Length: 109
Image (tube, rainbow, N blue to C red; front, side, top):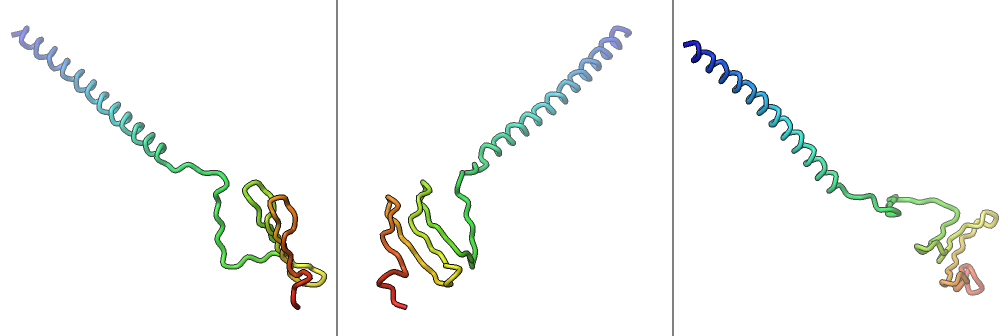
């Protein structure tokens, strides 16, 4: 019965090696699934779009405010004269010339 014992030992050794190999495959599969899932999550993350920041406030205090188009050209300007403490507003056409101004000659005080 020595051949039976040696065959049984050899079979036990093969089963032990297969269990170790199976454990490695399971760990590798779990790691691969985690990498795949994390790459999908990062691909679905929203991209940062440039120049789309929004600032919300109840009150804005300033002495001068310029409204510009996306190209940077000033279309309207609101100011407070620090000497006279009087507000003024100017509207500009696309060429940059003043088309309306207040207070102006028709401004009633």
